[in-house]
Amino acid sequence: QVQLVESGGGLVQAGGSLRLSCAASGSIRNILVMGWYRQVPGEQRDLVATISSGGSTNYENSVKGRFTISRDNAKNTVYLQMNSLKPEDTAVYYCNAHIIDWGFSDGRYWGQGTQVTVSS
Image (cartoon, rainbow, N blue to C red):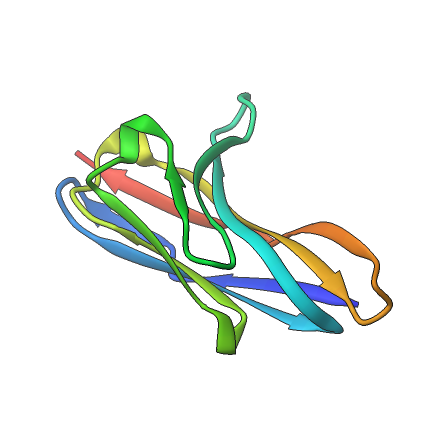
């Protein structure tokens, strides 16, 4: 069984910074891609950033130059450093991971979500 636990959301003023963390635990043999998505009420969940096991990154255009995704493979943890935050970044942020377990089954797992609110 695999679990993703997120932390680090909160309320911040425009121009401020937050750092999100997401730790994976359980029967994990290997973690492939990890990523962050966000969702506002009534809209679909959108990609924010992804990072491969080798460190290759991909960002949604609106966050390029402001957000940085990173991971610590030894800790099975992915981070999202968010700088120069804007009110339009307000959303629930979800961690996602593509994990292969010790039974050699693979699946995509989601965290519980953490609220990020940016005030103007």
